[in-house]
Image 1 (cartoon, rainbow, N blue to C red):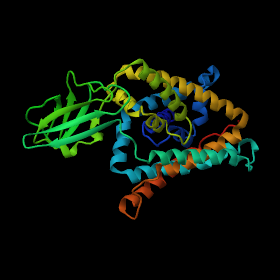
Image 2 (image 1 turned 120 degrees about the vertical axis):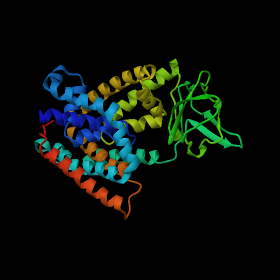
Image 3 (image 1 turned 90 degrees about the vertical axis):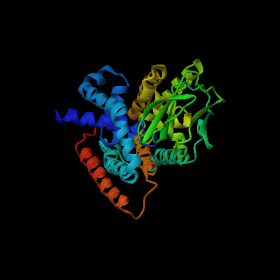
Image 4 (image 1 turned 30 degrees about the vertical axis):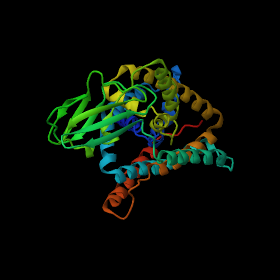
Length: 365
């Protein structure tokens, strides 16, 4: 029973990691010593599925729960305790290094200079992708808010490649009373008002829409983070999502590489996450197909490489995992109480990974 509960926890961590740009679900599988097992099952070999059927059921349940239910928790932790949360992940990563080393040297294999051929490019790949991720990103829309004596206007311009649907939402601080144009109130309280699009408020590609709010609206609180949207489905978007998510799904199971960050680079992250939150099946269908194709193809590729070049593959995994330390290194690191708490979190994360690693059986490839 305890084993099943742990497998659910591993799945939850894997699922949560895959919705956070910069955090690698593949790395989390390595941390918990289930990477080989998951990859083997994802190749859809009947023998592997039969052997690990209980594991994959409970791990899969955890992954679904992580994506749909627990992602908001980790997002809250990143927003409120970024240093400690990142350092906890750093602890998990550092603590997994001995397990990776055991996999590399399983069966009496020796580490040789040729291992650097795989280690260095893999390390550079993760560091390079992280560097790009930290550069300013082009927004797919722009917001311009202006106030006068009687009202304020908020203009949203669609800079994306597709038409936005009318189900967009805009959050404004405080309670809004008065006449609205171009939107309606979905939910309002003393702290926050959620506005939604009304009929005819679609925003075509390259076009803009102007919303009129009462003068008491706190337009200083309106940023790109306060505006959420989904795109209208069309054949081009369907194919774009299918191919983009397929590529991201391959990255999803590679340690050190963030599948969600790949979606950010491809410009589909906001669309996919918005569809998950709103259960927009027109977006979720090509997304699900892409995830299935990418994961199965990626697993088959990795499985084949492991059988022929296990030492080089684990050398690359070591580079990817060590490089991911740069990806999760906190921006607010310094001489303060949060960093002190972060070191505690790092030690806890490292201890968990080492404990799991010691109790993980390493199979010879």
